Amino acid sequence: MDIIIILFAFGLLLAGLAGSVLPVLPGPPLSWLGVLAFHFSSYGNFSLSFHIWMFTGMVVITVLDYLIPMWGAKKFGGSRAGVIGAGVGLLAGLFFGPAGFIAGPFFGALIFELVSDASDPTRAFKSAIGSFVGFLAGTGLKLLYGGIAIWFCVAAFFQM
Image 1: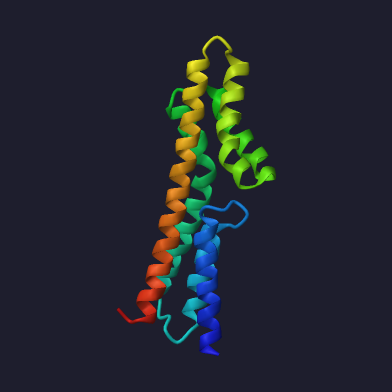
Image 2: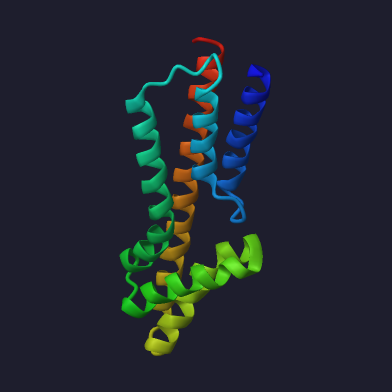
């Protein structure tokens, strides 16, 4: 039975890592479920505080993944319209697969900035770049979380 739990846990951990870059899978929640499943094997002796920290990290990163592209648009000089456009683009991009998830915030910020103030296309483009940089930062955070989850489980398995 232990081998089934371990295989299931590592399947979730790998799916979580893949979900860090594929928008069809919720990366951090799958990684957290992998850690939780691994805990029920004979190798998983994680403390309650460890699980609380991992859960908190998962929630924070999942929320930030939606907020960082909008923050990036604002940080790179975008107006309120650009920030709203990045959010709308992110939501619209969800319907167009991985490419839409990546391009949605960029084009949303760009279009909303251009509609808001067509006289300054440079600012619109900078806002769109900011939203893309925010997307990359969110993806990096998700990959880091997935890697940490895998590392803890592998370390526990080999009792490092």
